[in-house]
Length: 96
Image 1 (cartoon, one colour):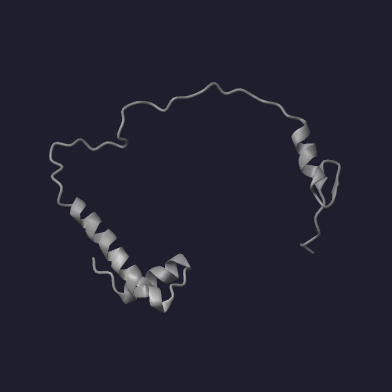
Image 2: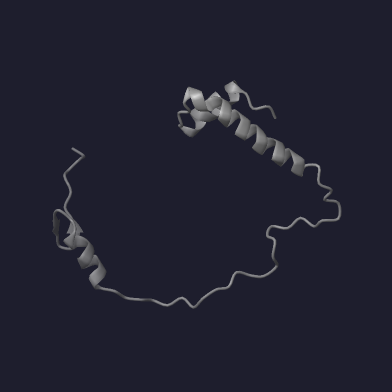
């Protein structure tokens, strides 16, 4: 895949980024390096290599699910609110 100014402009639009004119050439070179590196991976011989989802057969270690009750957390949060009443935040009305 060839990285050119047109593709960079498209990537710029898709990513909502603005790349300055003095950095465009540098970015094109860096993206070209990345793409050529990934292209090198297609040359690897993967015959006889099993397709797996993960690199390890080990399961994810799980921990005991325990409930920790902290009844003052809600009160602590509401103390930082500009306005609150009856355990709720008071906010300006935005829908008529």
